Length: 135
Image 1 (cartoon, rainbow, N blue to C red):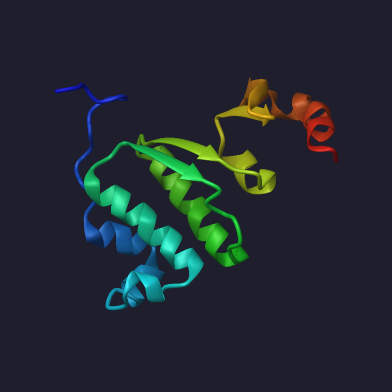
Image 2: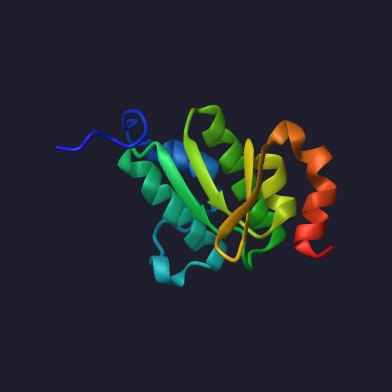
């Protein structure tokens, strides 16, 4: 048996906590997943992971194409999970969404990491980021 990659698995998050984090899912709990909106499907995907007891979440472009109100819900969810000790690896092109949530930044260009720094360095790195992003 292989050891876990990072720490020990957490207990599965109870449904009442998931429903308090994602009230939309509670309202739509009788609906099939395929009948949910794109944002609700993202919430459901995260909820499924939290029910497994995983302590590491990989979020790939989680805010893409979602309404601002859903992005706000996801922001609150990520902040809450960080406070609870979850490790979150997020790949995100929406810098305005990701920047306030990140502890560390890795900027990729053509598949290579071209810049990396901690959140405390973000303000000083903004000119470099604007150049890399072509802003």
